[in-house]
Length: 105
Image 1 (cartoon, helix red, strand yellow):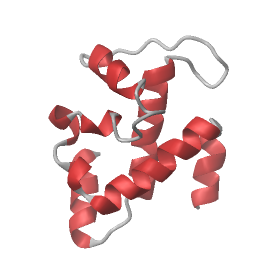
Image 2 (cartoon, helix red, strand yellow):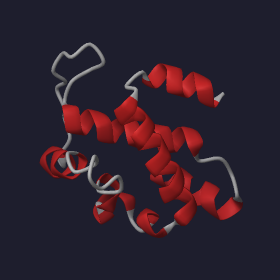
Image 3 (cartoon, one colour):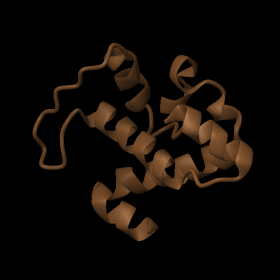
Image 4 (cartoon, helix red, strand yellow):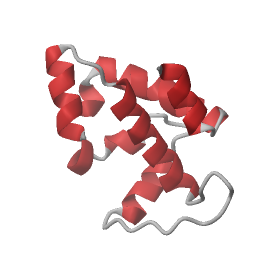
């Protein structure tokens, strides 16, 4: 997905749905619960690092994507960071990700 975002950034393609997925990944890494409040089993080698970064999102919306080993230099792309910030803030305000996706269509 990261490679697709880089490619679409380079060609002017859409990044909105991939950005939504990353923002949702951040939210669920932070909360570690599903939409019904049930604990999620997160199977990720970087689970602890992602949790630490994601829990900083309310004070630093870009904290999650600062993980260079995963996201490379996406943090330096203004188009991506602007959309990511807007999207992650929407998710933290309204956790109905399905509705957010429908609104994007």
